[in-house]
Length: 201
Image 1 (cartoon, rainbow, N blue to C red):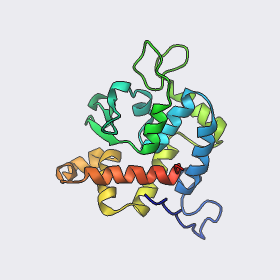
Image 2: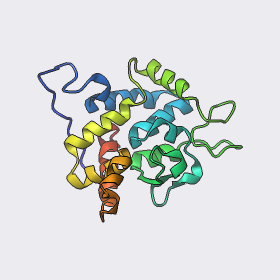
Image 3: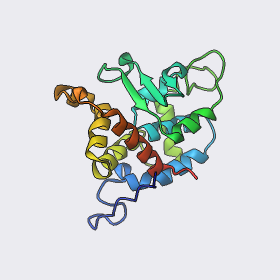
Image 4: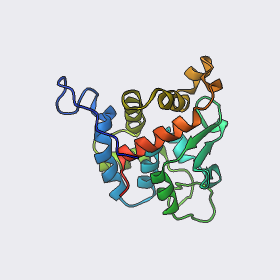
């Protein structure tokens, strides 16, 4: 798949474009490059967060048993989503590579456990790591940037399929979950976003 082109800058804000700094998709590749170069489990969790467009609690509670490497999917149980609906997230090649390179400590099924306790990494701790790597960037910045990118660069089917994940309550009320053949659009959008943020050689 060809690398997605950068979103044009706007004259309204020449420094960062049309959106605030923490929602500008064009800023994400640089931020993610810095995060990817940092060592440690929190940095890997931030990479996963950025590349999947997921919510922080969903990433921090993610378990290896949720991952199907063969199908390239991540299943988030309903009790761990804001909507209460089970979600199956397509995983890009970049995310699969990230997971393949992770060590799996004994005594926990968490993908991103705290180093000592092997419990979930506290959200404030993750936020501090990100702010140290990229001052002013919030953990929610990746998801907001993904939404902006999706609304400006994805196809209608990719947008609709992926927004079922980003805003399930809205789409449930409109019965978008009943629309057929949207899974492929979701997977295509997730791969295109990963290629935009972190191109693979």
